[in-house]
Length: 467
View (cartoon, rainbow, N blue to C red):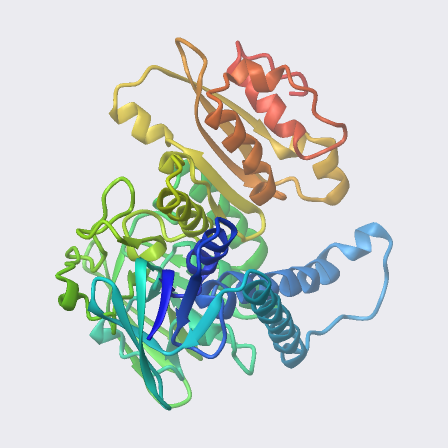
């Protein structure tokens, strides 16, 4: 029987990063993956392919709407969705090769198959060809999540599907219905709206991006309606989605009980994801899950057994690839006897629409509910030179600071390259910086990052310079 120091079940961002860090720390490490390719949801049907499509569709949109202003003249540019999908697949394939290289470089043994518990130190790996038992001192569960749906959505993966199928459509829909006004729905809705689809979004909530600061969703909704023609049906509860041949029909009720009927070529269900623990045989080790299906862990991410850990989407917290990666490193270092720290409050959230949306720390509503005395600095991208140059003037950066000691409590931004700009806010908050600290740091000119400085100045005695 093969024996290891650590076995990781699941090869997504959390799993493969945990395995690499364990190997770096001198542990004999194995990783078990049920699919032929490593990378989990993020690489195969999540972060990477969706961002590849977002990038392609944004180039197409800008070429048809902004190039003339730059003096670039050409006949009307068209998009070949087959080539777009081919490029996406090539990126994913290259990253698969990169992961295979990393496993070999770090001498991590890869087993293909479903990993299930025999006991707290033994895992059975089973695939179509054979099965074998593996022994290990420590086991890390990193099995991720799957798209969540409900029976009345009648998911058939043809006309009514999840984000997984939306990443591989063979045609550009004329009309696309999306159930869910969260990150996944808005990102993939943006992809097809840029390509020419008429996109309708239905959500039970009264606003989009309901988990983020209210100001961000308000601004993004305005831009999506103006630039991409999005139609929003908020405060609507979906009652049924039906495949009626060459199109679909959605029936929903508004908060005032008015009936809504929408028709489209396709309907994507994007109401969230659920933890995936199928096949682990958790009963064999008496590990229970919460009502939402997540594995319960302590502050060290240990289950009821001190040698079994769980990370990423399968435990509480936001379902983010970078959160899973940090937890993977954290667990590896705990096993090695180190004392790592993760501040889960400072894990940023990002939405890769255009403009991009990013957030870290507490929202304005959260702080007000806590009775916190706060001050707010906001600076718009329309007053930024670099944003004018690139024609990306929508959005703003909002800094919330403690009104007593000036410590930054939350940063919320929507605008160009906010996915990258948010890192400055994370660094500042990790070191408990004040708004004035950011305001006094030199930011290169002309750059988008100057908006961060100006927002900090605005939060510091309303000292913004360029507005």
